[in-house]
Each structure stands twice: as C-alpha cells, then as structure tokens.
Image (cartoon, rainbow, N blue to C red; front, side, top):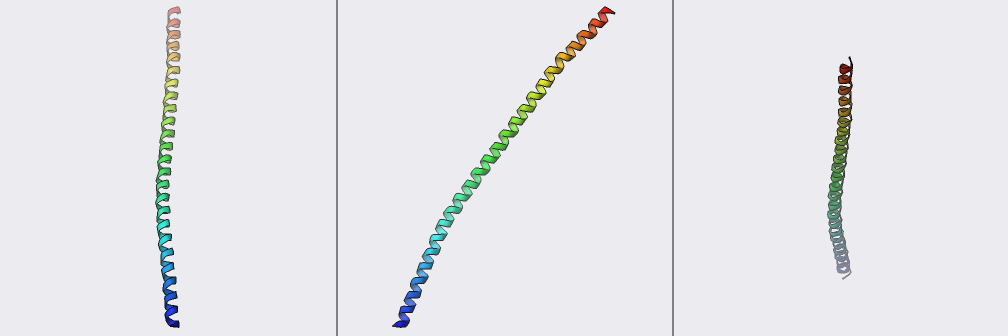
Length: 90
C-alpha cells in the first residue's frame, strides 16, 4: 500500500507538471502572437513614417528647386533688359 501511495503521488505530481506546462505553453503562445502583431504594427508605422518623411523632403526639394528657378528667371530677364538698354544707348 505504501508503494501504491507513492506511485499515486508521483502521478499527481506529473499531472500537475503537465497542466502547468500546458498553461505556460498556452499563455506563451498568446503572448508570442501578440508580440508578432505589435512587431508588424510597429514596422508598418516605421515604414509609413519614413515614406512620409521622404515625401516631405521631396516636396521641400521640389519647392526649393522651383524657388531657385523663379529667382533665376527674373534675374535673366533683368540681365537681358540691361543688355538691350546698353545696346540702345550705344
């Protein structure tokens, strides 16, 4: 009888360990799934932020180029007008 009691106690202990292992596996799987979801969510936000930043930089570059072109055109026109004025005076 004493041997049977020890076997039953060992079986109960093994059963408890199995349940703890299964519970840990279940919750670990849930946390891993949530972790992957957050990882892809963060990756999505990083990609969008970089894309928006690059788009903003591209827009700033385009605006700067446009401003430079607009500044050059009047100066070129003024230079042509001055050249034609010099030609008319001479």
